[in-house]
Length: 232
Image (cartoon, rainbow, N blue to C red; front, side, top):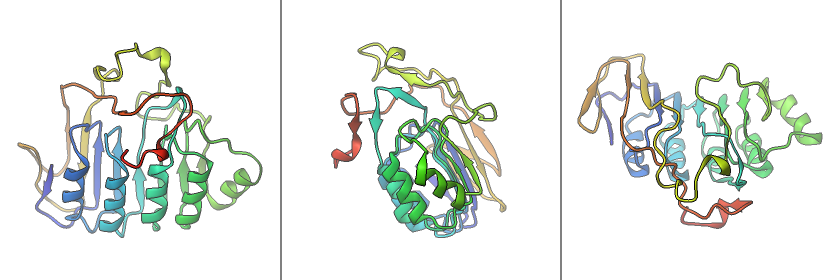
């Protein structure tokens, strides 16, 4: 759980924090009404967390919600895209590297986030930008990164995952293959922040040294659509 003693936090970065639960984030994010920049990359959080962020942080302008790109098995999921589109109407910058959204999810974001200036869709392999959709993206988005664009400037390991990367019993026993578990928090004001029993100052990077859970609790069938499962 995250606790902050200042309501003036404007920027928060959580990366590879798989121990942070939906409820922990939901309980804490309401304390940050002035938040403008948020990163929740490689965390095991659901749509519920994103909805809470949208409700609690009306000034949010930038969101990074990055995942590991995956081609096989093909997983189709608009849950995060719909949560963003329905709850974060003031976004200017959105990075959803490796997301499993489909074309309908992208269209929802374009409709729900009319002020969006930059959109990073790299390794979103369920998206095929062509025809009218590509034309609309180019007209509406000033800085557009397409699914197959270069990843040379991406700060994390961008190795594409597929079924061959895992043994049959490895989905629930996968130890931090990318070697980068960290949290960074930045704000314009001084504050204390507490994560479990750890205390940090104005800026911090924190490293976990424990088991990494790949985080999928459903069958890895080809073309699985997570939107069919209301409990996911």
